[in-house]
Image (cartoon, rainbow, N blue to C red; front, side, top):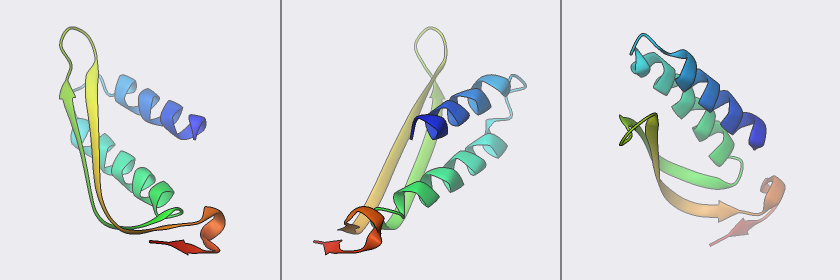
Amino acid sequence: MGELSNRIARMIENDGSGDIKRTMSVVQSDIMSLLCEFMDVRKLDVTVDRAQGVGFELKISAEVERFYGVGNTTENE
């Protein structure tokens, strides 16, 4: 998961033009893909705001129906 978080950080840092919407669309897609490996996600909200001082604050909220075991081989409720 370190590679995914590094990719997200690079995408946000490289978006100096302020056009965060396009970046956030890709971020949300990647996060949804990752989470769906481990859970049945019904709704995913990803927002980004300017942080106090320098940088951004990324918020991720997911409504989950159920969790899966590692590798989607079992279901945990």
